Image 1 (cartoon, rainbow, N blue to C red):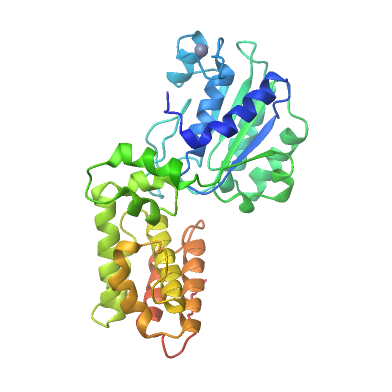
Image 2 (cartoon, rainbow, N blue to C red):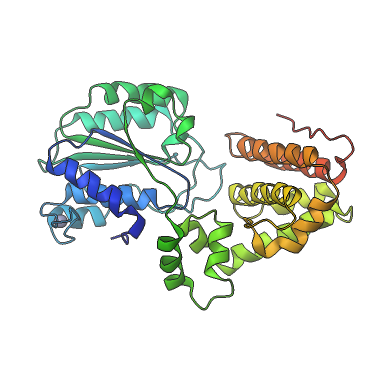
Length: 356
Ligand SMILES: [Zn+2]
């Protein structure tokens, strides 16, 4: 079973109280920033609901028929819906679970056929007389038709079914879907909870746990990922490459290639973080906190020349770049080239141009 995470406990207890009172909602929207373990929570809940003799805390026993089937990925009353296989898209590394889990190549959207199949699954009688559980992850990748198709099931959920929608960007879901789900909001845990948890896992590593947590914006699981040497090195290389671009020593078109290595969305989150830090440094030469404190000397240099207005415009452009690049069918290399070229020579013009 997935490890339970200390910052989940208040949410877990609330849900268990509802369950005990017979008021568990039919649809839950587990929303909040990436790196907080929403999917771990959703799987823990799914397993607990399918367990035949849960513990006093409401956790799965791990022994019964329901638990064994769940862990084998073959519980007949459990279905996982994720963006479906597509030969043209990138390798998945998310921890898929339950039926259909495992290494797959994925497209970026959940399609209507998948939702039709899911609604049919939920409409059938339960095999073991308990709940029927559906996990949609990431639910914010439902395309419009798929979301509309899901609405009917959300309006009139059949019998004892529970839908778990996991979303880092719930605003991407239609309001009609959101309003029919009970929102379970995940916030970043206080540092007093996050830091000891992280330190126990990465203590003695190359990077201070507090620095990892800063760079991860306070999300402990994201911080744990950054403790991986390859990721940390890639971030450093991208920062040094970006420095070369700003100094006019590296061709932005050549550099765009480097940015598509590894996880593009993660690379672009770093880019956004740097630009937020540049504004902090511009406004206050000795800011109390930076998202990337270990890059302070580089960031200082980048913040020295441009005006505050230019820095704000670059931040906007970085956020827009992230949104565009993570959308379906984006031409990421082209968008990156445009952004980096602008950064290389855009100080004078002031207005970044990002093609759609
Ligand atoms: Zn069990």
